[in-house]
Image 1 (tube, rainbow, N blue to C red):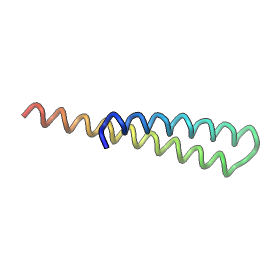
Image 2 (image 1 turned 60 degrees about the vertical axis):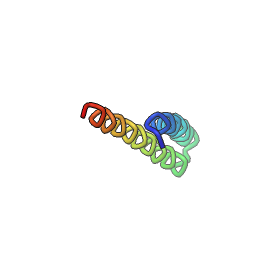
Image 3 (image 1 turned 180 degrees about the horizontal axis):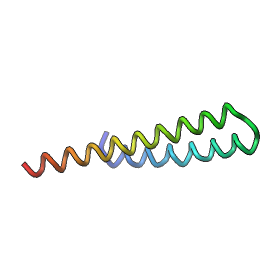
Length: 63
């Protein structure tokens, strides 16, 4: 997967996770809230992976 697709998927997971999390809070659904928090975290990790790929590619390009 490319760094751009990692970042896009990460952003999408963060948004979807936040929606689930807030919906869970509004409906007192702890399970949905927890799923949302986990999905938000997954999105943050995907974004970080994309950033790391960019950093590695930039380092290689400088060689």
